[in-house]
Every structure is written in structure tokens, then in C-alpha cells.
Amino acid sequence: MIHLLPLMIERVGVILIAVFLLSQMKSFRKIIHHDQGLREKTLLIAVFGLFGVISNYTGIEIHLNSAADTSWLIGIEPDSAIANTRIISIVIGSLLGGPVVGLGIGVIAGVHRFLLGGFTAFACAASAILAGFAAGYLGLLWKRRAPLTPLFAVSVGVVMEIMQMLIILLVTKPLHLAWGLVKIIGIPMIVINGLGMLLFMLIIQYILKEQERARALQTSKAFYIADQTLPFFRRGLNSESCLKVAELMLQLTDADAIAITDSVGVLAHAGAASDHHVPTKGFSTGLTKKVLKEGRVITAKSREEILCRHESCPLRGAVVLPLKVHGKTVGTLKLYFTNPDKLTEVEKELAEGLANLFSTQLELAEAEQQSKLLKNAEIKALQAQVHPHFLFNAINTISVLCRTNPEKARKLLLELSHFFRSNLQGARSMLIPLEKELEHVRAYLSLEQARFPDKYEVGFDIGPGLEKFRLPPFVLQPLVENCIRHAFSGKQKGRVAVTVQYRGDDLYIEVTDNGRGIAPEVLDVIGKEPVKSKRGTGTALVNIRERLEGIYNNESSFNISSSEDAGTAIAIRIPSAKKGGWELYDEGVFSG
Image 1: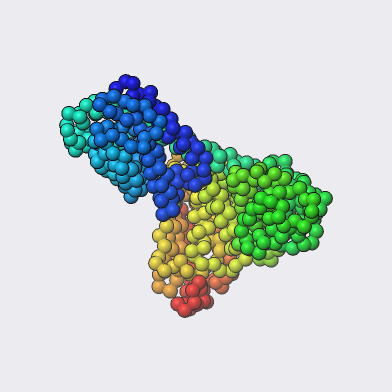
Image 2: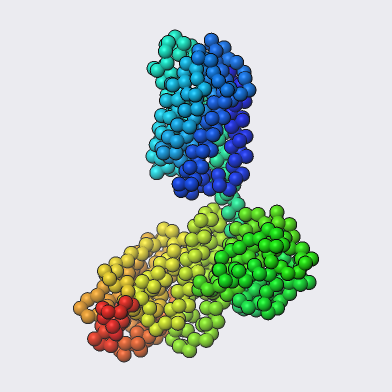
């Protein structure tokens, strides 16, 4: 029995080497990350089924209670059996893919084992199929509660191996041969296959952690580059700002050249091939035209694919990404490489992240430009109420999450983009749908609650069918922000309630909190004129009230009630269409 251990360890090593090499493939990593469609499940069955077959071929033949160390088993004598590592492939593949995948792997490995022969052929084949389905089902139940762990995988593998020994004893005849075989191979196979599953799971965990580390580093690097280029992109797409951005990116990435274009020509090119890739109207590569037309990322790994007409061009690889503002492609970001092997998936993902960030920066730059052109002084005044530290606090929060939770950081960045896009869109409109205003509020809350997850909670009570009603922009968000910033003390659990209901012919909006309240002397004037206070000036409330009065010809109402240490309630009434008031987003119900 003891002499089987080193032989079994050798067989486990063969499988682990194959798994490690396989782990370098992108498709296998995708499966490990649970991105499993029909194609991926089929691939799982094929790969781990093949591992099971290899385990059968590399098994150790047991004949008359002695082990024969052969390199490759083509067939087994009728009175012989094999000790192998088949259960590792079956259990791991089943845990990753579920019971259907496990059944497929078990059938492949089991049928092949049956065809090899030996007096345990039927028992081993049956146990392989049963182990595949059982392990897959157990893995499915476990993953509903928690991620797979090495301890769980080893436990399942040991149980499946013990089950195989029991099936051999129950099914195989004569019993004394079965019992003699189990005494020889039972403990070595349970121990070594358990060890193999532990090492297999450690490889998988390494893949997962390596991916997370790579994403965190990529995100951190992208944010750093975005932070360095932000002052230049704020000036928009022009030759001067884009040249600065290209030079910065050339220093901070592994690219050999960086180019930025707008929709009509090259604005800047830094690095290799600068002699003929020069700022000009029109484009020196057909690849850029294709990206502008199709609005998608395109890569090239040869001079012919880049479509540069210059015969001595040293550029051999490129990734060209669209820069978009409000969904429209307005330019491209191009990373060039003199060696196409440098254009790795890591570089491509970094470039895609940068293109998204740059697109957001361009949208913010456009928002700034649009705000300068606004003629409505009241809207501009409200825009100015956005707390100047809000953006910096949000960016700091996202920067920290880049290291601890990259996926959450990505989602918060999208919320930040959505928040400022809502600011811009609201500034262009007299009336917007209530659902858009609510999206603006929720984007703001997502960013604030990321900073203070347990400081407060916000509840919404929106009447049925009211999401499409139109109301002035920047009504709800400043009220909720006032609650968050001013209503609560440091240790107090804050609660904010937002209610929107249709009563009679009018729309009623109410925002209440359980905060510290407003002093009586301040309550008399707040919302009517700015006040001097350490906690704020109340300009946003004045702005909302004056806009409502102007839009609805003094038919609206804006009331504030508060008691110290008991909270504050702000109630808004928007008059019905019959009184020249609010409109619907969808035509055909009411119209104002």
C-alpha cells in the first residue's frame, strides 16, 4: 500500500502540470470566473473528460495484489484493476460546471474506464458517472451560499473516493478480490487524490486572485492617467490639449506611440512614426476611419492591418478606441506598438478603460462648456450649489475601492458619470420626467453611501404611474442632499423619506428627515432668502421655490416645517394641467 504513494504522486503531477498550462488560456480563465454559456459548459466537459481519460491511461495496474508501474495503460487483464487520479478531474470539473457538466465528464471518463477492462471495470465506470453528477449537485448547492473553497472541494473529493471504494465492494465479484484491492488502493487513492484536489483548487484560487490583482492595478493605473490628463481634456478636443495628453500617455504606458483624433483629422501624435503621422486634416491610417464609422474597438497586429500608406512605417500593432460623447463617436484614441507582441490583453484592457474615462472627461468638459453658455441665470445658480468637494470625495472613494473592490469602483464611476450627465441634461431642459430626476437622486446616493454606508437610509414612496410625469429639473436631488449634508449629527442614524403622490388634480412631493431640525429664527426666512449659517446658506431652497413660482405662475407651493431635534419636512405642490401646470412625459394622458 505504501509503495503506491510515490507512484500516485507522479500521476497527480502530470495532471497538475496540464492544468497549470491550461490556466494560461483566456477561455479557461473565463470558465473559472463562472462565465459559462453552452459553449463554455461543452468545453468544460471536453477538457475535464479528457483529463479523466488521461488519468485512466496513466493509472497504475494492480494485479494479484501487486502494483505494476507502467507508463501508459492500453488495456487491463481481466483479473486486474487500476489505481488512478480520475476522481480529481471528475470532481473539480463537476464543482465548476454543475450536475449536467459533471454527468458529461463522468460518462466520458467512466465509459473509457469500462473499455479498458479489468474485474472492477463496471464498478469504476458506475462510480465515475455517479460521482460526476453528485459532485456537480453539491457544488451547485454550495455556490448558492458561498464561493467554492479548497476545503469543500477536498471534502467532496474524499467522499466521492470513499463512495467508489464502497461501490467496488458492493458490485465486484468475487468479494475477496474486491476487498483485497480496496485494502491496497483505498487509503493511497483517498489521500493522494485529496491532495491533488487541494493543489488543483489552489491553482484556481491563484487564477482568481491574479485576475483581481491585475484588474486592481489596471484600474489604479487608468485612474492615475485620467487624473493627470483631466486638466487638458477639460479644454476639449484640440491640438494643444491632445498633444499634452498623448505625451503623458507615452510616458505612463508601454505603447511606442500615442495618437488622438477628432472626427475629421489627427489632432496629436507622439512617439514612433512622428515623421509621417502628423496632425492634419484627414487620416494617415484607414483603421481610424473604420473605428469612427463603426464606433467599436479595433486591434491590428501588422502594418497591413493598420492600413498605413507609408512604406517605411515602423508601427506593427495598434489598438484604436472610440471616444464618445453622449453615445456619439467624436474621436479616437490610438495606442501604437512597433512590436505586435507588446499588444497584450492587459494593454488592450487598459486602453479600453482609458477610452471610457476620457469619454467621460470629454462629456464633463462639454458640460462645463454648456454651463458657460447657459442663459438661464436660475439654472446656473442651482448648478453652482453642487458641493465643490463632492466630486473630489467621490473620486477619493473610488480610488480606495480600486484596490479593495474593483468591480464596485467601476460601478461607482458609472454612477458619477451618470450624476454629472444628469446635471448637464437637466440644465438644458425646462421639464424632465420624474424618473430622470429619481435616477439623478439615486446616482448621488450611491456615491454618498459608498463613503458613509451606515450613516443614513433613504426610502422612496412613488405613486403608481408617476414616473413619466414631467417636472422642473433639480427639485428632488438638492432637497435630499440638504438632508444628507445638514440634517444629521455625527452619531445619529439618519432617515430620509421621499414621497411623490397624485392627490386630486395636483402632484405632491414631500422630503422628510428625522434630523436635528431648524431653529425657529432660521425657519422663518429659509427658502425665501439666503441665510448666514455654518451649515449652509439655503440658496438651493430659494432657487427651487423661485423657479417653481416662475414656471407655474405662482400656482405652486413650497412649504418647510421643522422642529428642533424632531426633523424637517419640505412639501411641494405642483398644479395640475388644468391650472397651466405640469405635463406628462408620454402624450395622450394629460398635457400641460
